[in-house]
Image: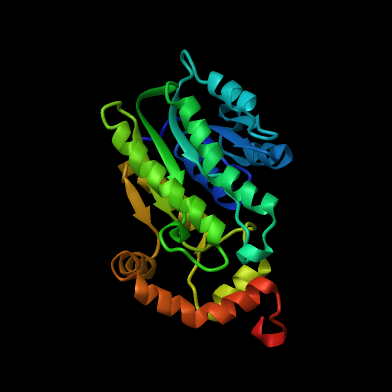
Length: 268
């Protein structure tokens, strides 16, 4: 797909990947509808994009049914949608016993309920050959200690994308799915960065992820997982999950220490 003059709805626009993606898409000539809860951050972002007058902001206070329907109603007549990017997400690095009911509900709502409802609302708003791009996570492919709820929601994102892509095969709408690995954004706590350093986990910049996502849109690649070793680990997890159990089991005490915040001094 040539992104020039394409209408793009981007959720989570004020986050790290969202901001980088907005810049990359705007540089390609896309017209953006920036969607999120932080009006000040989105207004600032809009002003920094090429041709800011071509882009718009949609403030979502709670992603209520009424707000989602009103957002969908913007895309009709000559202003129909070409690309929906479900990028908004949240996570909690914590053992399940540390998470409140609200922590759990917020991850489920933000990571899978809202993008599913928004996609449903937009299905009849697309121009021919529209695209839905769902942003998952490598942790949706590999269940990881201290990210149990997040892993579950991103696994659901993967399966939603797979099922919906098959369901819409004859509609002209393509459904793409991308699974970034650890990404350097404010979504991660200091403990997450410290744990990644301790375990030697690789991470990507938000701009690298954004540029790769733009390439996926241009080529309409159905599925993409970031990181060579991560892709290998996903295959091992699928075929020999016991090996992954053992590998992560050896790291479990370290993961638990960082999740509980009991690491001090140089180890942190």
